Image (cartoon, rainbow, N blue to C red; front, side, top):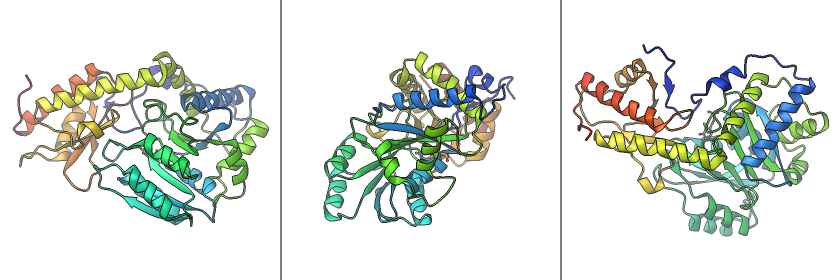
Length: 372
Ligand SMILES: *Cc1c(COP(=O)(O)O)cnc(C)c1O
């Protein structure tokens, strides 16, 4: 093993900075004014990252990102509503499964894992079915790394008078999300992806008027965004125990996000990471699955080398011994693995990953091209 902790080249939880980890070395009283101030500051900063105006608010929800998605869907889609889910991977499918579990009507518009939803088709569906009240779009479908067309779909949904709920879990903080300009109904994300915080909290950015109207909608007590919001506004506190250390770490992670130049700065570093890993692995003959034009800079799916000596688990184990934790593929169509470009990674580290991959392939007896 290497002396340092391995780098996480995963879709999150991601590698965090020493400062972010150090922010957790203190205990906070959930009722205390100091912690309330941190909660208020984090909420305000997340709103700013989302480019939301005063008509919006940010409501944190304890748990992983999936809890926040379930909370948002259950709170914002009324029991009499109907959602259109745009699915081209596991997270779109999970949103649909969530709607089924919580008893909300929905339609699925599914495309292939390497095909984005067609805005023209979305428009056609919305015109043909006036009962659709909400549309759910996954910004970057982390299954493959494909970037779905937020702007054109948001404009269509808004023009048709429907509400767009955006799962921005794997883009928030790295790619621009002009919430107010695009008239988004809700944006959902979590602390531990591009914001480079630690896992344990998600959040929903939504209009105050929508939340007010949604009081009483939710299928669940603990996953009620409107109730959490109302209580937080009244008391400055969370309903039920907050993940205090996670929020303190997120506050520190947001300092670093700002110091890096906010979303444009972070996005630029991830893009440089992305270029370094794609160019480097291409040099070894390992190709990304998604065409470059559709690919997000957040996470990349690569085709496994077509060689009888290649198997994912020994490849994974040897890379881990070199200090790099990669991620298995989640595509149904092809044998793949994934490399995340998020977290406190740099193009230099991505270059080290490429060198380690070349050594591991040699070790496994897998033929590959030599880097120039
Ligand atoms: C990670 C992710 C989720 C789920 O988040 P968890 O923290 O794993 O529950 C949902 N949607 C997208 C697009 C994601 O990348």
